[in-house]
Amino acid sequence: MTENITFFADGMLGSLARKLRIWGFNVLYDTTTDDQLLLDLVRKEKRVLLTADRDLFGIAKKRGINSILVQENTDEDRLIAIFTELQMEEVQLDHAKSRCPKCNGYLVAANRQDLPKKVPHGILNSHQEFYSCSPCDKVYWLGSHWNRILKQAKNIEERLKRD
Ligand SMILES: [Zn+2]
Image (cartoon, rainbow, N blue to C red; front, side, top):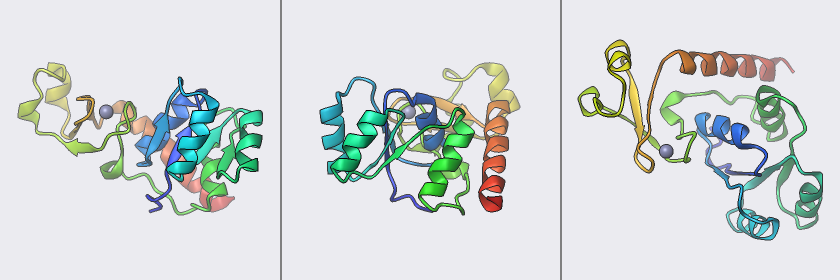
């Protein structure tokens, strides 16, 4: 995949940032950074700036910073626009490559016996696959929430092939 493409999402795009992390992308997201510092960081780390702010987009373009103006209303449409712009029509969601939506850390498969204090008993007994994030300690499992994400991913993959 195009794992060498990394992003910086502006403060208005938190839910898009979380989705892109689930798709496996390295996405920085910071609501506190001022525009000047943000642009310096994006340039230094050669990230793609995702912004809904037309002024910021204009400044970034002028400075030769790779950026995408996000104008769509739903995350599904936004992801399609971004993948299309970056010519990633073949992109596929693979949960083995997902990053932590909360902190951008890598997820690693977790053993059930290590989780009793972190996951509700019912969840622990009714699910097979668990992943944990070492930077923030959050635990994820493949359940109904994941199924919704997968369904959305399938839509996106099909729409990318069709358009
Ligand atoms: Zn995390």
